[in-house]
Image (cartoon, rainbow over all chains, first blue to last red; front, side, top):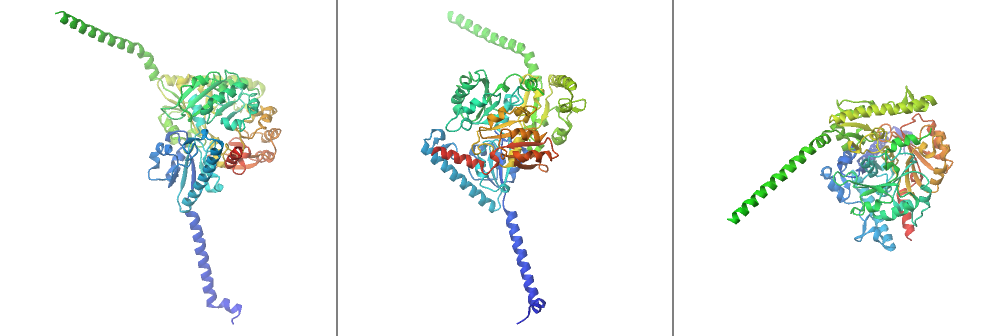
Amino acid sequence: MITCSKFIKSKHAWTLLMLCFSFFCYANTHAHQEKTDRGKFYVIGMGPAGPEHATYKAIECIKEADVIFCSDDMSERFSTYLKGKTLLGNPWRGKFKYKWKDIEELGTREKKACQEERIRFWDEIVVKIKSEMASGKNVAILDSGDPGVFGPSHRIIEGFEEDEVEIIPGLGCFQATMAALKKSSIPAYDTRFVMLTAPFFLLGRPENEDILRDLSKYPITMAFYMALKHADSLIAKLKKYYASDLPVAVVYNAGYPEKEKVVKGTLGTILDDIKSEKESWLGMIIVGRCLEGQPQRGMIKHVVR
Amino acid sequence: MSLTIFLGTYAMKQKTQFFFVIAIMVALAIGAWPSQASAWGRGHFYVIGTGPAGPRTATLQALDTIKQMDVIIANEKHIKLFAEYTGSKPVLFDPWTGIWDYKGKSQRELNKEDLAKFKVERFRIRDERVKKINALLAEGKDVGLLDSGNPCLYGPSHWYIEPFQSQDVIIIPGMGCDAAAMAALGKSTIPAHDTHFVIQTAPFSLMGWKMQDHRLLKDLAKYESTIILYMALWKPQEVFAALQEALPSDMPCAVVFWAGYPDRQRVVRGTLADMGDKLAADKEKFMGLLFIGRFLEGKPYEAAMKRGQKELE
């Protein structure tokens, strides 16, 4: 038997101490290595149209990514920047179609099944991204427009811890739409606010028109996303609460140099004005006095300080 | 014989028709030339949304457009940020001096008499500058005004856009500071829980300059929404006292300062009850965007989807 003090002084103690230290160093380095080798996850707002509307930072960020999720349409538009990248498919599969039918055409049971399928599919994407990151790959989802407003990528973002994701903001279609109209959305005469919404978000389910009754007391600029398919019912509801001479504009394909088109009218005329238009998805409806005259100058007259 | 005469007459007719058509085309071209020539030769007034925080947050189109301009209009800070793209291009003037200040004072500090003079003077200055731009366009020059963020939402460039004919102006859209701030917060503003709409405004538009008109806010408070307030850092305690007249005190809110600037961006979170004091203690009084709403809590997008699922049951 050796005593404790003898052991400390012995060669064995020093050998044990060295072994412990080496093990600690190895474990620590290995853990650190694993952490630094983990890939990054970017959600990149690519703007409303082609590369010209992407930010410099968005393009730089694509360069850093090894693995990309994006729609087929986007991979075509950004093909120059995606060379050499591994494309893992469309993260929005099933967002617009289910069993070859438009989402709008589904019955309640099918709609429910479709939503469940979407949730399952998005959860699968989260797992795939995490696995790619674990193997040291940088992963990016290319989202159109600005991911902060009606950006579907948030369903995937929410599967991660806050510090695991970097969102690269992008130019939204609202900005491109207003640029095409060449008007100030606010300040604009006595406009109190700009409202970004979609018809089914504004009115809710079941539809509640009280919201329109309350809003119509105040001058505002309304910007409707995803409204082209339901333009007739939206305009009919707005006409109940607003004057029929209230200006309305529809901007189709905002930001696409050869496809962008502006149609202007009023609540009373716009449905006739857009009757011949075939596009039913890529477009935004803007409603408000900001569309007429000189809205910014008009605001100066209204503001009483 | 008669056939020869017929063919000869026919050929003559064809020749006459041909020369007649040529004559009409030449006449049209001559008639149209002067007006078309002036339209083609005239330059354009570009209003370039340069994004919230320098070249990295500008679009490729914005950067490319700056390079193509003959003359630039921008303040010194903007020129410095985009020096790589503006190069040695002539800078016509700083577009913002005299628009919000008078005799070295901010418009907020002016007495009644000076305020009245300022309201006239700012338009005189603007009109004088518009003349300068017009003269350059007439010489065939392209003039580019650099505006921060998104020119069509609280974009001061509309001071200069509105006096021009629509065909003279091209607006290059820019990413707003709202997009950069949303990215910093990492949340979906809509879909988010039961949010019906996103509101973009400023305290003075929402509640009046004296923060005493709460009717609109009370109507809005009936529905879940995401509210984004520009220019809300000035007199924060007054702003937050007014907001609490209509909205619950525990409503989450956040301010993103210097959105998009890599070294300066920061986020301050709180509720309507405590944010006023937090902002009062903060030195930054302008470069910040205020967000209010339940979208700041939990997983707003998933919550909205789950609500959608329930509605189908």
